[in-house]
Length: 336
Ligand code: 5AD
Ligand code: SF4
Image (cartoon, rainbow, N blue to C red; front, side, top):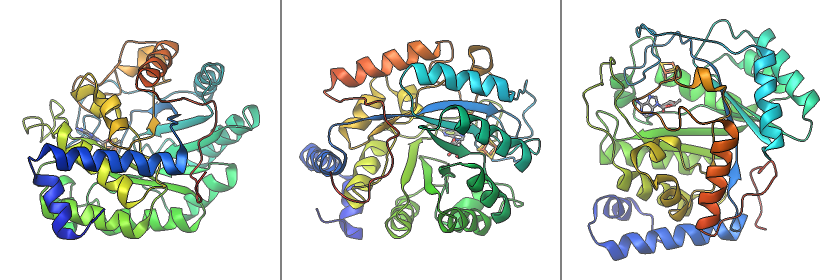
């Protein structure tokens, strides 16, 4: 499929349903060729809602006066135990940029999880850190790191973040993670304020060049009390098209059907799979802390138990003819 700049623009803007169906079909073909009809599950554990940053879009930004929490190592291990029984072989520990999460504490958690679950992959998503810090986390046993780049356009980045957050530093972190041997995930929101076809083309060009192992994208959803709390949400349709373009561009990428999509549309995650996604990330966080991790409004499945969300995801995937294997689901460099 032709992914020239002109054609990307056409695919992002056309109202021709045939062109879009072709795009989705091509994306699914590309995915199936590398990974087969499999959707990999990751257990998401929201380890801290404290954050030193003040991203303008996020409901956990520093200026939000909200109840905050951190999970103890024992609570995190309990989430993993529950997840392991449910067939999870990847645990994603995600949180705000919390100074309490020192290298020592994170390494200790990573080592403990690896010791108890040596056959599982650990993904960290704890924001920007220094290269030395990333190196210690890797050394402790972390396999993967998610750090969305948010936008590949420096001016757009500056519109979404306060001045103390530097686009260059974000990009440096991604490069450091790559150099240190992590499987790296970048990504962005679709429909964030100030986004345009031009900035999206830069995001795609960045992905094409950096070739991350994972790409997380989901629609922007306004969060009450933030500077962008009254901005319109991003489009589900555009998100699906972007997922498909990313899959066609980079057939090996691990591409989650994000909860933001599931929040925006009852069949959002199924539709993402239909556009070439191959990862789902049900929430394993303790029930009572889930509601507190409110990045955006009406975040999905705040009330359900881990077992319930895993069963729900399995049923949804089976219904669209996808298998959910009990495996780590690592990045594949070669075709099956
Ligand atoms: N809507 C959708 N996604 C959001 N994120 C943060 N705030 C929002 C929002 N309001 C995304 C960012 C961040 C990830 C953890 O969640 O892309 O990297
Ligand atoms: Fe903090 Fe992440 Fe939210 Fe930014 S997006 S305020 S870094 S939790």
